[in-house]
Length: 221
Ligand code: DC
Image (cartoon, rainbow, N blue to C red; front, side, top):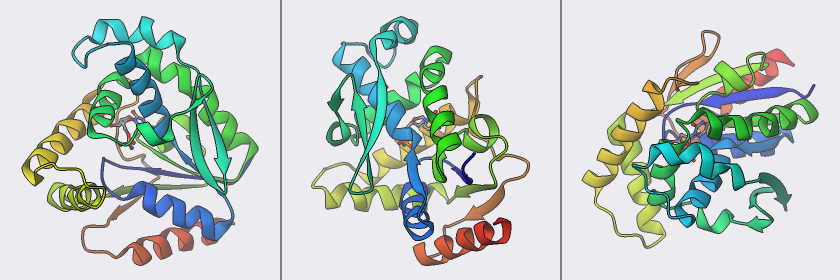
């Protein structure tokens, strides 16, 4: 069993930024589980499945095989042999991932992949249900969050930087909807694990959050 760090939290809380930095510093691998759900969402979109067509998710997702590879230390998501890492970072795919990840058949497709990675490697894994469901015995669990306004502003700046044109109001609305869906679904909803350390990063710098998590890891090693 590797040393396992689980970081859960809502969309835009900075999980991936922090998890990547922590993994780099500790020489662990970073596992982005959201990217796996996004790959399945991309598959469904390409199949012409609409976000409201929830009754098609279970059947249609059966044709999606997701795996990951590391290129220069960066996770790449492979969907049926194609590296789709460049296609999964849009709001459309993110919203579809939030909707389709509600389906137990979609979640079941990714369970073994996530658990095996953690069994074989020292990992920092981020997602929504890592500490509660995927790795209930993780060595360190963090619930990382920030206010909706702060998360929307961060995502707004990120998308602007990529030349995407979306209003702050629209992003805030999307985040609220996604929070609601992720927290209220029946299977593996987003919630803080009892033994997770709660970190609100609204008024913290990236370095401060990273240092707090590294301190937690070092206290357990
Ligand atoms: O972290 P992200 O925005 O890339 O995740 C996209 C969606 O995938 C998220 O809204 C819910 C789903 N997801 C999940 O259900 N469980 C995870 N462990 C990770 C993501």
